Length: 401
Image (cartoon, rainbow, N blue to C red; front, side):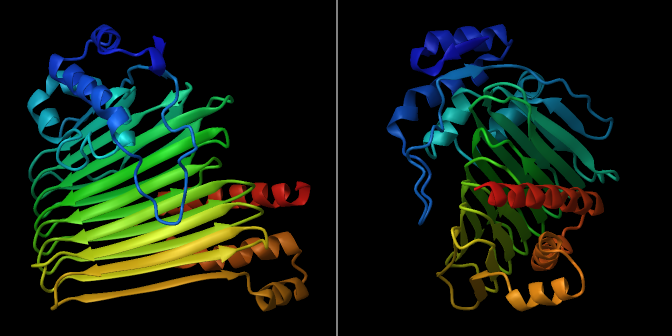
């Protein structure tokens, strides 16, 4: 069922959610988000203005995805999980990691959620094989939610790929929440390939407990305008997170990316490594934020934000930000924005390699530091294939512009 957001009332939202067989607590959460949405502001993005974008479209559709679950862990459609595991869902869904009332887009997401998954790993469980999920946008609105809860002493790898099936102008509001309990290991990898007609808001955040580890490997390969928030909160002593982001923009695409690690726990470690390539007339802003809270003695926050510009018409920025409220810590950053090394290109072309191929080889070398650090061989291979395809498309756009 589809309905215009401008015509949406709490009664109509209840009607749609009831037809979707959602429990009362889930419906009430939707209604609260709907009521406060107009009072909230958009998420803040330094040096990047997206206030004129259509981030909360007029038409929404609520649907259900079907997924099986294994014997040693729970993997369910998020609406089914709300019915079968209400205590877990009420404790964690848009409540512990990301809250519905944080900003206009999180409220919109909660009110108009139309698909998602819940993954629960019980205590002392090691999931040997990676869990792979393909999400396809097949309607004008793509409001998806992935909630991963890894209990104590667990291990899991999760691979997500997102693509677009629709051709008309549309939107995506996708949130991932990870709860990593003590001594757990969660490896999350994603390749985002939403289309040029999709305006996207992507928010991914982890709550990391004592001696837990969360590894993020993200290939941001969307073709449309995108705002992204990638956050990790290191609450436990000895907690650890690595965030790797690879991003390529082409055409007239605009992307703003906030990647943040906040060290709350003693001896916590948070590293950010971002690489971006900007082609044609596109725009890419990297904001890397490392924040060490008072009391997080022995913490370590390091980051690299590097942007390679392949066109004189492109615009890029890499903004490292360190907020240090504790003395006994290690913290550092590196940032660079520059054009391709012409000597490298000349050398390759002097060996008989055509210019387009030479450019792609230079870019592969630039991205190599991040690609080699991605723990999943499969996601590395998928990402390399996607990078090659997007670079080739970007070169075609440059020729025709």
